[in-house]
Length: 266
Image 1: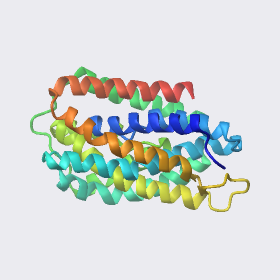
Image 2: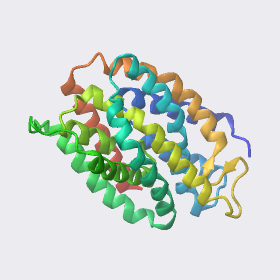
Image 3: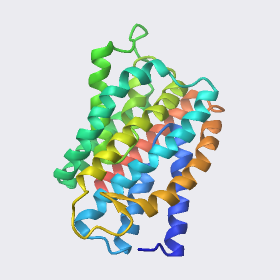
Image 4: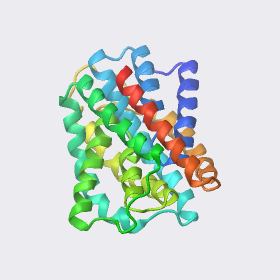
């Protein structure tokens, strides 16, 4: 199943947008990629019952590559809290694998409404810019493991890199916004790798899957988007580190509102 030139151009543009968002805000760009991939896969004649799940799975798979490019740019500026990554990653991996299996079984309509409400709440918290309690810090190992599971499950369900949960959580715990964004970019890798593997496994024996698919992951779309997104992610990271904290929070809140609108419309 070959991609037509127009579809390749659409995937390239969406990949560039996703890369910029990944570097700027530490997110995986699902709000751009999932709608575009849904359109592309539908145009390619993919079975309707597979389209959205393949779009989510492929969006997650692109984050494997985008996060590597983004985190390298943030790490050069010392904006990745590796101590947080180490304690969140185990729960994230477990939650991402489980979330992928759950996503295959649950109706998308119900998930869309629930997460639209949740994401709107997170965006409002960022937009209000309430100062956290100065004494509040990152929870202990067990608490972080539980938070990681929640981030992993939610990310796998919606095809995102987890920043819509992890960035508000970290700023709530008095982590600087730039460090929260950089750390979120690093967390995107285990989320995407584990969830993509879960989707690939869940769709391994399904009939009538399109050529070039690995389970629910659509490899031709993945290749085009990953190439474009990895190119733009470092630019987004440079822009992020040249901005004041408050405008960055406003941008992130706006992105969360866009994601919430996407779920409601879907």
